[in-house]
Length: 172
Image 1 (cartoon, rainbow, N blue to C red):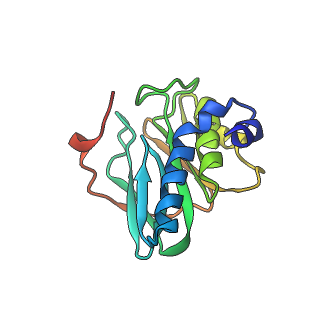
Image 2 (cartoon, one colour):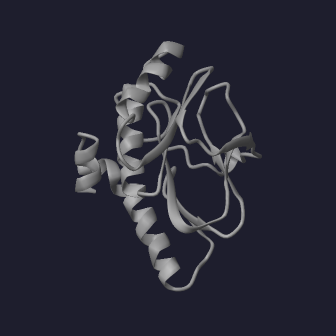
């Protein structure tokens, strides 16, 4: 957590949920699991022997039912999301969803926080926000949703429609 927070120039608490998710999946892999997913409030660690669609919840954004396809892999990877308009965590930005893709789940969590902190309102802000994560070793890609805008940088999983069951999402 300290390393991830320092890499992103923010505190170690920015990586708590991602770190817990990764530790849980690591324990499952050590016990023999080839398919495991832990979602800790939008900070997800997974290992999958078949394709998995992960839905992205972006609150009141008009962008709905968005899913990301994670192809089978034999190592743990992470997708972590931060938001300024959704959930109880503190963010200094206005992202409806700021997601990071990395095999270092702790780094993904801290980077999602840093990315989300950069997002303001509008298309130009979405585009400019990626400066927070470009050039950081270990970050594969990023996705930002703000209002009616979506932006992507780097390697982003294939996008598909997802049947997101909003009533199942903890929103407080």
